[in-house]
Length: 114
Image 1 (cartoon, helix red, strand yellow):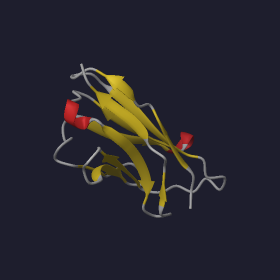
Image 2: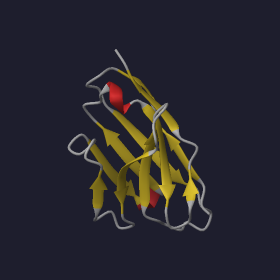
Image 3: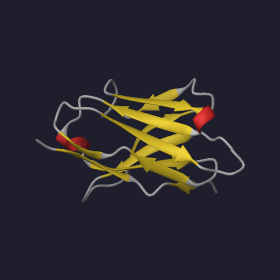
């Protein structure tokens, strides 16, 4: 497993933006594809976006396509999720996960309200 830590969540008004970070503090500096998920109260966990190790391939859920951008900086062992044009329905705990190492972060809360 690897240690993933999310940050960057907070309270934002509808239409606003946030950038989430997922830092992999693996001492062996192993890289991995990374997925972002979100979990809203009373709802199933939802896959949001994914990125390959080299960053060349990215995919998005239809619900965020055109508004969210996933990227990574392997020199910093960090994957980002830039969230724009946020809507109240984006309110959730956002988690990053490594499918390769079966690891999850603890999550960061995003609340979109005005």
